[in-house]
Image (cartoon, rainbow, N blue to C red; front, top):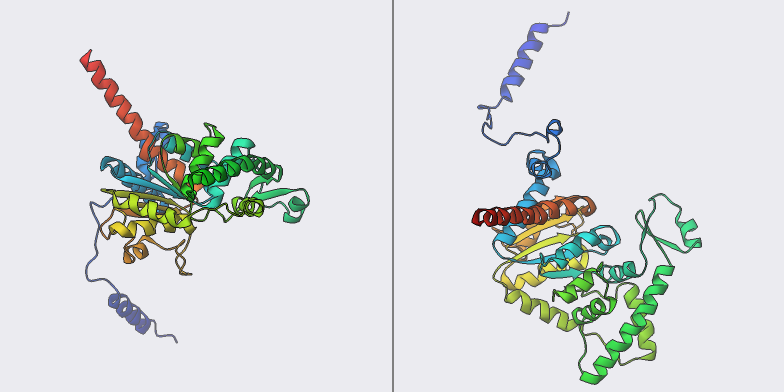
Length: 352
């Protein structure tokens, strides 16, 4: 016969052994709750509700508040982004920030430059993730996720670039000075003369666009072909580093909004080592730290290298930037601007 008395005694002892001596109630801490759609949609209230949502919604809410702080403290705002941010609809979001001078410095990869120009010439189209790569290749269509880019876009791009290369080379021969990528990108922005372009507004508003990896893409291919007939054509990558460091050294405070990883993220972070790190920073990416990559590295790692100040308000939002970035801009920039307009309107009405 089973001894149930002994079993109960052992269970009770086991339970007592692992019971905490005191249970914390955490009374007064923010409670977890989502937005109440029964009240209808108040977008500002919806964005504020993200803080209590938990998980990455809370991080997004924190990012919005950090972006507001960057602006209040008049920090020089660096926006770095990978090329896929221009492939998708974030191109228009970035263009808004640049057009309205809400960011001060751009850092991107080669695709972030060339795709902005290509989209001025002919748009990308929406496709699907699961289409056969072989079938697309055989029909001359390239794929970036579920975004399709037919080869004819690059034919238009090549034609446009030939004229830009010729003018840049003529300028180099006339002045005896070699352009760095930033200066060459400014020439691109002036040449495209299209208000849908990030580079157009960057050139118009004197916002520098740094691209240390300019030759890593279609632009690099076209530079190769141009140099075949113009071997003296040069781009000075060393000046790119000198210019961004000089810029950083003249900043009282810096804030970083870093979309994705790669060279664009690292170039912005590395430049800020020269002033002992960013004062504010928001990462948006899906990268993980377990492979030791800088792309997936958390902010804590950047602190060890002096890329971010130890006490800097900072957050990493683990999310696809095509979702998180428009919301960050809506809450951190657009809502603040709307509030400012309402406040100004109220003051003007009071004066009347």
